[in-house]
Length: 161
Image (tube, rainbow, N blue to C red; front, side, top):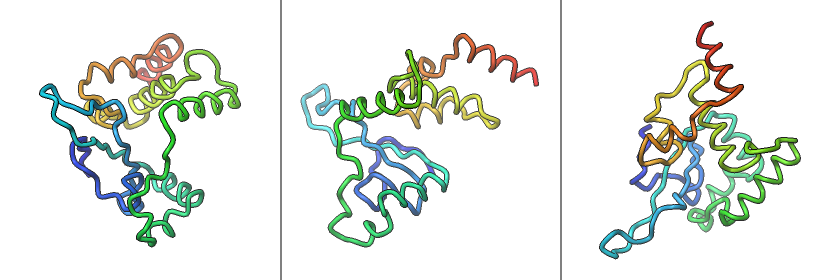
């Protein structure tokens, strides 16, 4: 499946998750509502492929298959909270998990995702990670994927194996 930021995905449930395609679909929240000429812009979406376990576990929690059968729920997103509420929830989960410092933020979570995707057994190419993270330029992705300190050491040692 291609990762296109500019096309509306064919998700069954309110452009939030597609069980058949195994993707979570996000609406870009930082996109400008108007272009340089003042014309309104359509919302931008991006699809993130996820393992079967993620969609199966999400189905268990939100009963996605039942929602997909109901025509009145077709256009409703699963998560309707604001960016601020989401940020507070992430901070709370990080605190309960005992994660402290710069890592205990939304940006820290994105950094961890970037490093994990680049340092796995089958590292993602930077252009695919850029699309998954919703960046228009790979230079922004490089900021999130910069390893420092112990991360840098572990990645360098792993490369020698």
